[in-house]
Image (cartoon, rainbow, N blue to C red; front, side, top):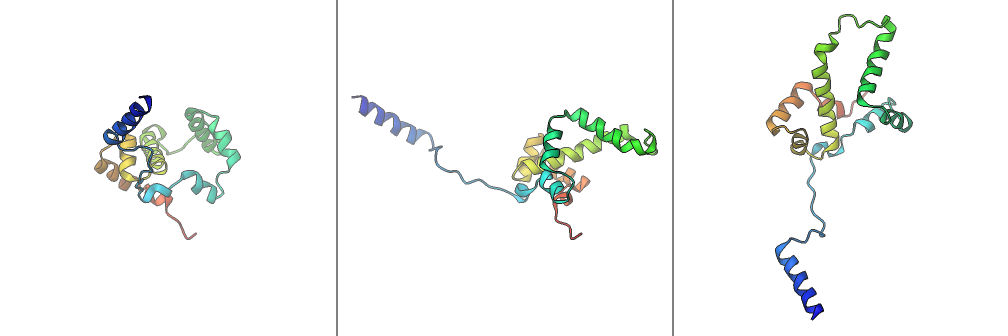
Length: 138
């Protein structure tokens, strides 16, 4: 009796639920192979050790440190660069790079950021984000 009930339960699940244990076909787009980490490592601008140290810092600390290091040669001043007014564009460019490198397609990247696909494509074009990941002949 128990075996018959088990068979009925299995049959019920096979009929009513698509077999989720089967391997699903995963679609991927052009940005499936994008990676900021790989790009920086290839250009000798990053290493595994550096990324481990960087990972232990908060985003606020990383931004503050980068700004401090970039103004140090000028005595702590950033002449002619409106940092406060440029922050929004700097952050948007960085977030677009992350969205492209962590998702498999542009549609998925748009969903990741909570944007409509057309808005996402417009921002990619505005910031020329995809050119960051393209191979250069330098």
